[in-house]
Image 1 (cartoon, helix red, strand yellow):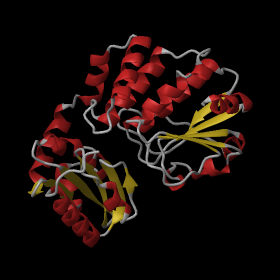
Image 2 (spheres, rainbow, N blue to C red):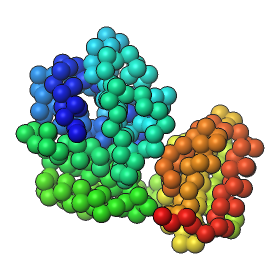
Image 3 (spheres, one colour):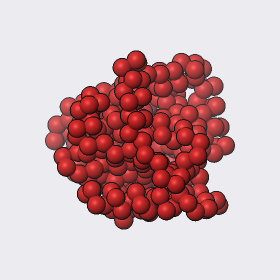
Image 4 (cartoon, rainbow, N blue to C red):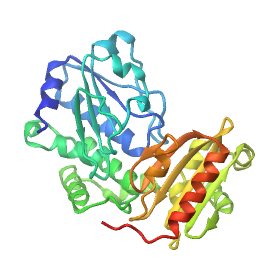
Length: 315
């Protein structure tokens, strides 16, 4: 099933790994895992990671010339639609492979490998790199660490509704193969410094709850008071999800007069359809929208509050 990926890797002397704008942990760690795997096993090839945006503790990126982009195989990870790729030059590549776990928005690749049931792109990528066609190749400790970190970040330590026994099997396989110190990886990814911890404590004061829906909306003045940019603040959305009685939670930040929004929910409360109506999208229980008006934000919150009062649709 995954042999066509390997065939294309062998065919091209130049390979560029692409990812989505404002990468989360799963996106960044998946890109890094693939990069390390290719560097280990195809030393004669030139391999680079594209993208300007960085992710918290990971800032790795390469300078890529137009000529390099035009002649390299493009492998895009964790990106549902072509307009979210953090370097549009991916569309200039002679061949493009998409590896993703989001609901399909558009099949922009020449080859598309999408598993919507995978809890993380790292889960699907681990399956690929350990599949039969790839068995002759070396999977290093570093690759296993990156893939495990991708799993941790996208499942919030295996707490999300899309975490399955397959996710845990892959995690166990990575831990065994890489002889990973799992507790060290979790500590690295989840521990906060004092300054960040205190800022998170202040963010909690902005929480409002209506029915079984919680939401935080920060304008520019709020962000100045918190001494945080919108991206860093919105990344704390998982703090709201720790409240037992909430079924749905939302975090919105003012970015140049409009709002970037992240929405999360517990199993059975499907929220990506509401985001799609406003030009966003994502998973059933984790979705987002960029640059919506204050009126659209009010509508979204009212719809989510109403949804939170209903019985979950458990399948």
